[in-house]
Image 1 (spheres, rainbow, N blue to C red):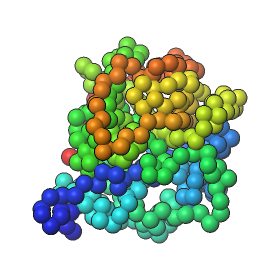
Image 2: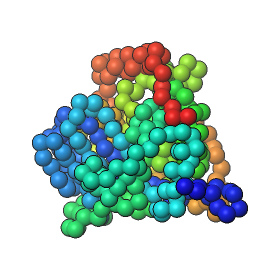
Image 3: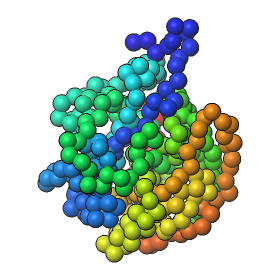
Length: 331
């Protein structure tokens, strides 16, 4: 497999990668249906005692909840725009001695793709590459409510004790570019967040880390997943519905300082947060983009809500336990 051009220079895959789907393991499928369909406005594509598949556009599946015990994101699927870009990424993984498995058949169909290449990324989160999504034969009931396209289905935020290695991983494999940084004190800890883009979406990956003592207060592999709504009305109505349905709100409606999106964070049935946002900035790389450090996550809003003493104790316990375990990095 050759991942270089004729002149010996490896081609960039920037702009050829986007977040395509997320696979969640959960024993709470009925709650997930209420949350995703009744609360956030997605459309159920398939449901059974062991599976809930959800749509937001012409892709057969964007979010898949499979019956399991972990209550966590099991895999993130990354859509690659061409076979050439896929070969480049696979060559980079081979050069770093990262094992990759090719998957077809029922496992690929479960995710709404024809085939995929799976490997383990940071924190042993399964990352899955695909080039051919399965498109649904029927129009999506949620068509037009979400923004996907060239920027993908959204973004993911991950906490880490090894931010330099985490950022280097995404830059090495996907040619990710740094958009900007945010620094903020939260619950007595100083945090720095680095926002990485792999296409014109302001960020597809956010990497969060504490300053000083390196701890990870998030018990799940990710801190949140985000999807983008097509209208502000969708966001505000989803916020109202989630509250009326009894789902916890992690952070209230607010506007971010760096990508300017208006959003809220709901607590998913599995415990990690789910952000629904509207109107974030996009970055055209023909122009210079300053890598600013913003002194705070939000201009307004995004106040913590519905956080119990048990939640705080759980985060403290996760942070302390993170000091005594090795955080996996592929290289």
